Amino acid sequence: MVMGVLLFISFLSAPQGIKNITSYATAIGGFLYPFIWLFAAIYGPELGREIAKEKYAVFGYMGGLFLLGLFLSLFMALKYSFKSSK
Image (cartoon, rainbow, N blue to C red; front, side):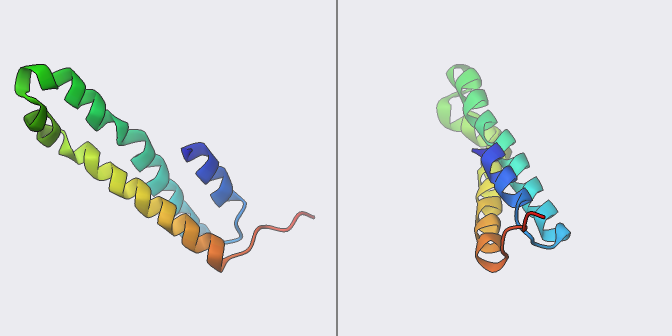
């Protein structure tokens, strides 16, 4: 899903700054978010499920960063058009 959103962003004719911010937010959030579930599954049996999730909560916040990137890409899709082929 992340690669599809990044390709979609690359075809928009938005300013390069907002495209970079959106791309980084989507890529970083989409890459790091699943690690909360991995670490919670690994350390859950010895620490307890809730404590393991709280210990690695920073990875959970990356899901919000991913959603921010998705909302920014939706905003760019509504505001800017696609690049025209030459």
